[in-house]
Length: 326
Image 1: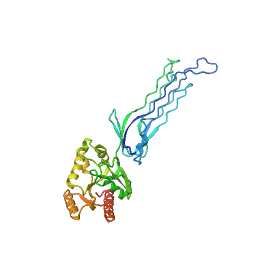
Image 2: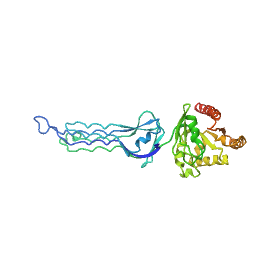
Image 3: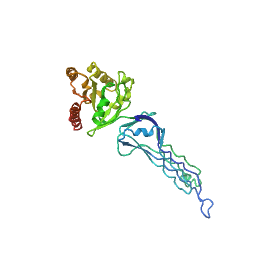
Image 4: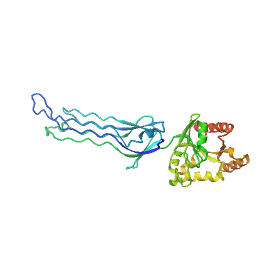
C-alpha cells in the first residue's frame, strides 16, 4: 500500500534524573554526597532514502522516541546517555510541527539533527560546597524536544504525467517504463502516484484531477502536491476529448489556483490515443494546441512505430532538460 502522508508523534529522549545518595567508605560514616548526574536523552536525526514506499513502514506506528538517559548512580556515577534515533523518510518528505507550524524538508543522505534530547539532572554531589557539605538537593532530567508532526511526501521526479482522468497517463507510463500502473476507463483509476524508470529518468503518473481540485475536490490536493516537485510537466490530453483546449485549460486553471508558480514549469503537451481518431482530426487538435506556443507530441500506445518515435523525442527533451538546455 502506497502511503504519502501520515501523522507521527516524534520525541527526543528525556534526560535521566540526578539522585540523592551518600558515599559509604570503610571507616567513614559520613563520607559525603555521592549522588550521580543523570545521562542525557538521545537525539533524533533525520535521513533521506530513495524508496518512495518507505512511509508505509510507519503506517501502524504512532510514536517514535529516542532512548531516555539513565538516572544517576551512587558513588558519583553518571547515568548512561540515551541512544540517538535516526529516522529515515523518503527523499522529498516534509515534516510539519502541528503546534509551531514550522516545517523541515528531508533531502540529505547524511543524518541531520532534528530534535535534541533533554539534559540529565544533577545528583546531590553536584551541589557540594564549603557552605553545603551535606546537600540533599537533586534535579530532574529535562524532557527532550518533540511534538506531533504531519508528514507528507512530495515526489522528486524527472517528469510528471498529468491530465484529466482517462487521459492515458497510466498506459503511457506502462509502455515507456514497464511499470504496472492500474488502467481503467473510469475516473481515479490511479489513486496514488506510480513511478517508472525511462532510460534512467524517473517518470511519475500523477493522479488525475477534476475541476475544483484546488479546493480539494476529487484527488485534487494529492495531485497538486506531487506536481510541485517535478522538473517538467508532460500534459496528457486524450484525442477522445471534444475540445483539447478546454481539457488543457481545466488542468492549467487548477494548477494556477493552487500555486501560480506551477505555470512556470517546462511543459510538453502529449496527445494520447491517436489511433482512435483520423489523421485529419489529429491535425486539427494539434493545430489548436500549438496555438499555445507549446511543444506538442502525439502517441498511441497500441502502435509500436508511434511509441518508438515518441520515446526518442521524449528522451531528447529530458536529456536537454538535465543539461539545462530547456
